Length: 302
Image (cartoon, rainbow, N blue to C red; front, side):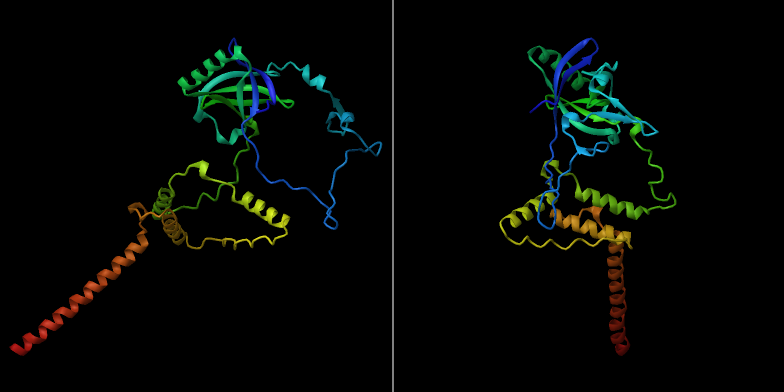
């Protein structure tokens, strides 16, 4: 894998030369913009608004726009001279339990590779220390022109780093939750538990992108001059009028899809009560008819 950044992990006075490589890759199908009338590619040109002419990449720099619209040029040299100790260093600042990290902060993921033979020993030391402590390391590092926060953890025998958003970059969830006056009944929670138990766990490796596969099949069909297959009818969506009924149906469908027998936890209580009521009625009816047959002969005998 190609490295995107070279530097070192600073672990106290221990320095570990490393290479940073992407731990993820995108499999999304990309599209180009075209002119629908003739299929011509739509391209964007970078034009200087003062000279009204197209400029090359070599002529383009960066600037900060002040409140009054003034552009303040900023060069790579300006940024390189900033007194930031993390410019070429992943500086570990703390070790904390993994559950202290809010998943909302999780960003891009990277693998840290030991850079050279001398780095192998300190790299292994940090890796084994993380394993034994069952903690993650919180670090600061600089990448793409800004200082960032990161979390180091062990994945198999590799140290991985997750970029983290700074705490002040996480928005408070004000006004997002529904009205606090809304409540749910115990029966509804029981059915929700039953549905969760029925769905159970899943191996994430078995999950795949159905939409991407459908797009690829459609592209293949169009490229070969065939008519793409019709899309299945979308599932009906809308307001759930009867939550209990929806939960009951969900439990049944989940059990059928898993080929499992209904579990005790997945029993639908409302349906069970109706069934019991029918049986009770049948017994009462039989009880009334039986005495009627026996009473008539007794009268004749007397």
